[in-house]
Each structure stands twice: as C-alpha cells, then as structure tokens.
Length: 453
Image (tube, rainbow, N blue to C red; front, side, top):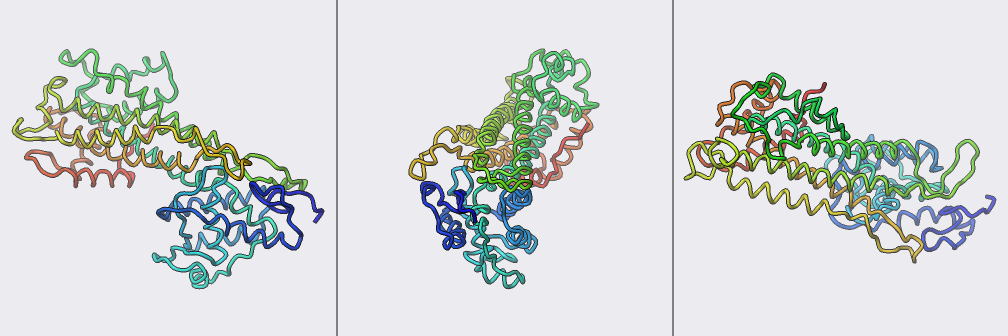
C-alpha cells in the first residue's frame, strides 16, 4: 500500500526484478507466479514425496515468516488431510527455491492441473469438489510465499535421512553375521580402542555391533583366528561411524529447515518489517547430503568386500563361494557380480553434482546448489545400499552355517533366524533373486534394526 519495492509483491521476479507492478496488477501477478513456474518435467514424484513437500511448506508458512494468508495455510492443510496429492514431475529445480514442484502443488490447490486422489489421477478441480474443498484464491503475497522455498529438497531430504538410518541399521545386522561367519577379531571394536581415538560416531558404531555380538563365542580367545583381519572387517567402526556422523549432520540441517522460515522476502511478525535476504540458499544442506552419499559409498564398498572375503577360501576355511556341494556348483559366485554392479552405481552416484550451475534469470541468479538432485541421488545410493545389505545378510547366514558356528551373539542369532525365515540355506544352485527381494523388502519395512543401548 505504501508502494515500497517488495520483491515478488510490488516487483517482478528473477531477471524482472526491476519491473514495478502497478497496484491493479499485483493480485493477478500472484496467480501468474505458479502458472509461469509449473514447468517441471519427467516422471511424477511418489505420493509420499509429494506429501513431504506439502508438509514442509505448511510448516514453513506456519512460522509467519512468509507472510502468507491464513486461507492458503488452511488450504494446504486441508488438501493433506483429504489425501489430495498434486501430480508433481520430478525435474526442474536447481535448489534456489524449489519453484517448479511447489508451483504444481499451488496450481492444484487453485483447481488447476492434476492430482492423485483416492488412488486415481483426476483433474484437481474435480478432486477438490469431491473432497468438499473450494479452490484456493491467492492473496497479495501468497504466490511467491507458496513457491519460493526449498520444500522439495527438505521434504525428500527428511525421507532420505529416515531411509539412511534404516539402511545403516541393516548393514550393521549384516556385519554381525559376517563377523560371526568370518570368526573376526573383536579387538578393533574394543571400547578402549575407540576411546583412544574417538573419531565422530565410530565408538557408537562399534558399540552397536558389540551389542549384536553380545554373548558370542568371538569374545573367547581362539588361536586359529587371524591377529589382523582384512580392513573391511577391521575398519568397520571407522567407516560405519563416518556414515553415521554424516547422517547426523544431514538430519540436523533438515530439522533446521523444517523449523525456521527460509523465505525471501522475510516478514518479521513482531514489527511488520519486510527484509530481503538469501535464507533460501541451502548450500549447507546440499553439501551435507553430498558428504552423506560419499560416506555411504565407503560403507557399500566395505560391505561388498566382507561378502567377497567370506566366499574366498584364501581368507577362511569355508568352501569357495559358500557352496556346500563343492566347486562344480556356483554357490554365491555370480552374486559377487550383482554386488559389484551395485557398488559401481553407488560410486558413480557419489560424485558431486552441487559444484556448478548455469547462470539463470538473465544472470541475476548466478549460483545454485542443485540440492534436489543431490538429495535424489543420495536416495538412489540408499536404495542400492539396501540391496547390498540384503545380499550381505544372506552371505553371512550361509557362512555361519557352513562354519558350524554354535555360539552366536544374542542379537546376531535373532538376525540369523529372521534371515532364514525369508531366505533358506543355499544347498543346490537355485535363483537367489527372490531371497534378496524378500530381504530388501524386510529392510524397508524396518525388520532389521540393531538393538539400542
């Protein structure tokens, strides 16, 4: 009303920031904001991802910093509660505000575009009417308030953190079986060793594995065991701990974004001032997920090597490829190739994508972090890590049986029984894909979780 320059309210956006909007055009401009930015492409995001994005934007609007109207906040909450999920194509954002994804969501609330409702894809206006919800009418700052934030990166990041915790737990369960089957030394896990050089989260990773191995015969002296195991066993705590530390960092940054407004311009609730800023820049979050992906790549590599070592009589007294019928059978030999393929894909995905971006908006927006791409590839890494854990669980259980290990740790014994309930012993060669699929599904369902302290 004072005709002061307010970005996206009395001025244009991006390269059009120097354009002043006439008072008569300001309200219509808010409708044009999502319409002009609904240009994402590719496969649609899963419903759980869309719900996460909507919830992140709802949380941010509720802080008041965006200056959104109560009607917009209520419309977003009502759509979530009614199960109206806009169709959102995956690709479009460079991470300086996830404009495209949020534009598709905003248009759906306005009754435009398509949504998933009651299991079918239908026009947004039809779904809103069926749910008894009126189309949203945007107020003076609602268009930019809805789209100008990194809700896609943060929402999907929250899901990735949850999946990462789950996958690392499954890797720990597989490692417990692999330690038992290999008759590995527990000296590197000793709390005194960890206390001598407490790298971040390594003592916690060691303690978690020791809880799984509590009561194991591995705690008893055995002159037949190696003084020094291969590094994939010996450095378990350091590698797993580094990944856990990266996960802690990523989780903290997701929580920061969930609980604080990143809007530009920012509305100060107490004074009503409007401050222009770059709080939407989430380079710290992008870097945290880059680091997490690289740390998980190290976890994947070590997990594959543990499985390979268990299949080699050069390192154990077990039959080659863990086949009880001898070398005229393949056993787990070709599963090594599956592990190698998964590990190679993980290493490829762990390469950074956040280091460069094309300048946009006529050079006005000259840096970007590609946060959605970083988070998405970290999700792909975790998906492959689950498969590595599933194969590792099977290999570890087979090694325990062939080695006739009697005194398993309490936690390891429980993991072994769970594995055998889904994947029987491998005697004669047979397809192993169904076993791996059953175990991967069980990991996703949270059935392989190490005991807590």
